[in-house]
Length: 477
Length: 130
Ligand SMILES: [Zn+2]
Ligand SMILES: [Zn+2]
Image (cartoon, rainbow over all chains, first blue to last red; front, side):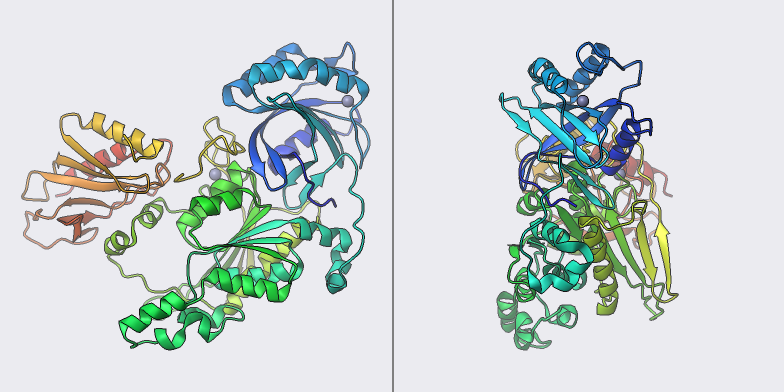
């Protein structure tokens, strides 16, 4: 597998990739064509083109024998794509395929045709215009920018069950290995260890699950962790935060029955959860870069950090957090995984079905809204100032039960899902559905979800924000 | 309309147009959303009073969030003389005595459901009570 590459990239949502790939490689070893329309965003290693929709050229109708090259898109097909790109402010990327497997390059007629056509299309659309050539496991592309510059694409990224990264040629194997990772590198190789070391991963929510996640990610050797949580450590958290100390929660000041002044002082002196997370990550692995964001995930600073991430772990259980992360996943095509534990205990003490959920966040697939995981009324309540919210909730909120062993199932499986995706070790035909564990019955379910046809996040409906990147504001901004 | 996110400003305009014959007070809530008070609506046959104000927040999560909860005048008294019961709960809202109406729109669709539609839905719901 290839590590993330510096420079301009093109991210293609997995469902769109599968559609385009099936069209280009039907098994006839012939050449086929399509046009991808894409949004644009700033990324951690350079500008990112974000594929949103594709027009597949029908052989013999839209894709015909060319005058200079082997095949060419018809003027009519190209003009329809230009109209769409212009109307929706999208980049235009013509795609065709070559034979070959792990390396690919444009032919000289390809390059001549780019130089002949693309500057004019840039003029018409005011957006980036490029060509992409694919082999089965390789991609090469060049893009003409509105400022007149011309860039070779560093990589094509497909965030599916495996985080596919295609280049024109496979990356050179890494030199020199860190012996401290020897045993885990025996699973995914030094190349895999190198991929993890290049990744920027955000963890939203540093409670029972998030605090275990950061420990695992630090020890895996993820290069850069962005940890986001507005809260401070409380005495009631200590038993389920790894390596938390009593002093982190100022327990002797915040004990029940202590005077209000001491309680306030104790809160002021307690450690932010981001500080505890950073301490644990550094203890696990001194090489990790840590960015601490002690704010709500819906704050502009946190959203800006999420847009720049390669992966997001959603381990906060508010509707606000799910909504904010969901928007980034689909608008910016950033993959991730959501984790949650539900422990229903009735007022009479009856324990219901314990439930640990691990839900892949796949750009362009059934989103958190489509899965009914965000409650619009609760989202409204969470947006109220605290005193208004407290008054409006006439049923008093009891703290939810939380048990570390259950949190560990969630964190362990989510981090493993991430690891296998990042190093490309998920089996090729593995599904991307959610999984639910029911520890009391020792069962495990696969939960299929379907995206709504007109969803404003995950669908390709004209009104959706899928892949639009920086062209739209994120929720609340 | 300054102090509002574009989506919020659009919904206020729609409210003002829908209630052209009434007064629609709006005030920025500091995070891009709005406090809204409509003077006055018909609280329906369940109450002695024939008029009430209707207040709510269009939050900065507009249009994805529901408009929830909404508030009516705290002076409303039931015609049957009984105390208020959930989803109606006496409270205060912006220093006014208020009756909170916790009416969820579980099938909230951000493409269709605006504050104006919610307000009309609240009034329709009140009219059907007895
Ligand atoms: Zn070619
Ligand atoms: Zn959706």
